Amino acid sequence: MTGIPTPEAGVSPIRVFVVDDHEVVRLGLRAFLTATSDVEPVGDAPDGRTALERLDALAAQGALPDVVLMDLVLPGLDGSASTALIKKAYPEVSVVVVTSFGEARRVHGALEAGATGYVLKDADVQEIVRAIRAAHRGEVHLDPTVTGVLTRSLIAPQRGVTALTNRERDVLVLVAQGLSNRDIGKALSIGERTVQTHLGNLLTKLGLASRTQAALWAVREGLLEP
Image (cartoon, rainbow, N blue to C red; front, top):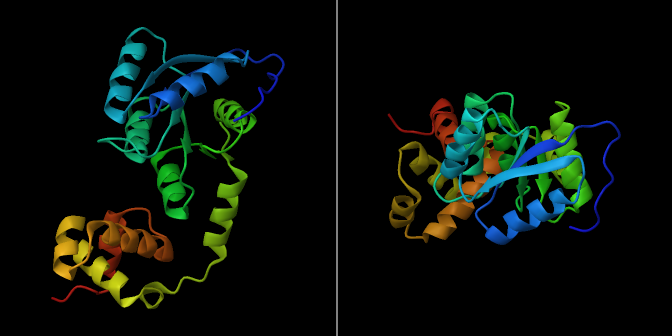
C-alpha cells in the first residue's frame, strides 16, 4: 500500500473501525487512514466477537463508525459471519472487506452477508480509501481483480454435478451427511487439508458460498441415498 489519496472536497471525516487478527495490519491501516484528512480511525479489534463488543460500546456512546474494514479469515467468528451480525445489529454501518482472498465463493459470501465493498490486501491505499468513501455514499466498490473474478464466474457454464471430480462428489455427499472435514478425511483416507481443498474447488464449480449451501444443493440434486 503506497501513497495517500487527497480527500474529496466538502466531505466530513468518515469514522472507520478496523477488524483484522494481525496487529501489524491493524496498525498499518490505522496509520494510513490517519494520514487521510477525510477519514478518522475510531478503533480496531482482532476478531469478530471483540469487534461486536467494541461496536456495542461505541453505540452506547453514540459514536458508531460509518465504515468497518473487515478481514475474512478471523479466529472464531469469521469475517462473513461477523459482517452479517454487524449489519443485523447496526444496518447503518457499512462493511468493506479487506482480505488476501479473491475467490468467487468468498466474494459472494461476503456480499450476501451485507458487505458493500471488497478490496484485496495487496491493493494500494488509494483503492482502500476509495472503497471507504464509496461505502459511506452507499455505493458498492469492488477491487478490479475481484470484479474480474465475479465476471468470469457469471459467464462460466453451470455444469452441475458433472463438473465435479469423483473425489469432490464424495466430499460433497459427506458434507451433506453432516460430517466435519476431519471425519470426511478419515472416511476417505485423505488429509483434512486435502478435504478443505476439494471443498473449496467444488464450491467454486457449483457457484456456492458455504458448506451449508453445498449440503442443501446435494439434497436437492438427489445425491444422498434414501
